[in-house]
Image 1 (cartoon, rainbow, N blue to C red):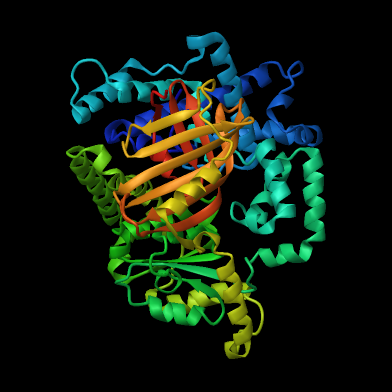
Image 2: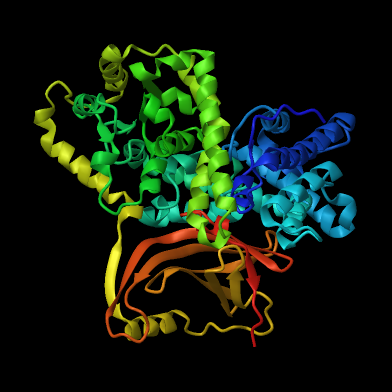
Length: 583
């Protein structure tokens, strides 16, 4: 099968690969995984074309959608095939394509469970040997492959590993849709912590008929609120400024834009101790993004990471404006473009080499930097191509051009912003109220009070000896992350602790139910807290900082391992839990 892949495609395998520094063979591994997905779609199309009159593929699609638009559903199969083999799309497939791909995977998983090895994805011996050689080089074993190598092969060849590694979430499935629609109608604040109304609107086509009608009726009744939410509680557009701090044009740009828009800039929007990564990720929520391109910008990990988040969205380039500063004008020449690509390649190789010499358990957070650099390396060429194929104004004219582009989208009296001070203040207050993940609840408790609170949390839950999931689990990657799973009346309670030091640790707690289809515990009430205080035995206060509530997590169980996928801060992608011997 000849596929012209441009990188990661629709997989989130990067999270898995980050725990294994196999840079030279990563793209081959990803390409192999994507070839398998392509083959699932291609086989379905072949089946449809050879048995057209006798074959009805309605089981791949939402019942309501196929009944109303069967032709569009069939077209979706072809569109999905073209998407997989055409471009880098991360996890931004349209909901209907996600739905189809998920069902095709489910079919292959069922076949695999019933018929075994005949339905495994067969990794070529050539690639197996390359992966093994890389492990020998990194890990130093020279006899039998170790567990990490075997796990890598197992994940790549096992169809049932593909769903948790392909899908960041399953909000397009009926189970999640019912939950989100209920929240949207009954608990707006809680709903907006996990999704926007616009995102849920985009999922209507895959909703079962009853909840589609219920949600559509709700949206009609809430039309006024819906219109307000389109600007996220502000009648003025939001503009995100992405720049390097050495640039000297940004102050004037912000000053001019502030008269007609709400400007998001790290200097003013990011408070002390706020999460920098969360702020960078928020670039995707802005109405416009202005990228101030300089030589320093194109060589900065934080700046490039911001842009990588933006590029995850379909049609991202339509709401971006570029200001190319004089010291970066060379990017219009191919040779200088190649220099930037080489810069990131060399930066990745240097950091990867340095990390090899250290214990992975000691460099978990530094490995996150390597993940960002690899992402930048894969897509820096695409970014430069986008910058160079639009008509960018000269730097001296750029500020006026940006203001003119943003101005038509603003409303109200923009000729004299001083008359709108009261409205502007209220807009700012409302915007701050909706920065949910920045609202930290801080409490101080003695250690004794804290332990009693933990006991209350676990009331009625036990380590059920008859349940293979219950008990203590350890993360074999970091060797500093511990998980406990309890059960009561068919429901599970999970507590995960990551020790940063003797006097500080991070804790996640959540509850959920077993999903047989996904082979996972699904949780929608994940709470993340930082516990800081004196070591045990002292009498000082513990400081408990609640970072967020109502996060979404899934714990996938395969053979003897547990993989934790958490949607809120993605810590779980770095963990591989193995159950300990529990008496």
